[in-house]
Length: 168
Image (cartoon, rainbow, N blue to C red; front, side):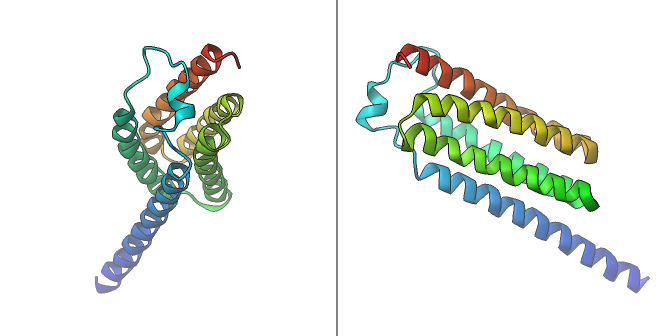
């Protein structure tokens, strides 16, 4: 009985370490991306934006729980993954977070509407791949990613509308 409890504790500790790693990775993504954002810049304020663009404060309000869901989903799925599936999922998650942060640098950092559209399209493809891999391992964790993917599709539509309205 005691051996079983010890094994359960080790397994539980390993699970929490995975959640801590995914939370750290998502936090690093958010911080790296946020460094490029300047929604108060003259360049951004001068852009013609569609009337359906949410107010600036809404982005932080939406991204915070979305990032938390990505960290939770990634931790849960990685804890259930084995072998090649786990490695593939870890690579897919890392690529996704990289693309997520890179969009901010493409759009705000480079002030490139075209690069922003390309970045969101790549992120949408990455989201589909991440959900596909996650579904094979843990369908519950995959469903948790749907709002994140949906918000990114919305971001693609918004970025595309801004690019069109500004003759890019």
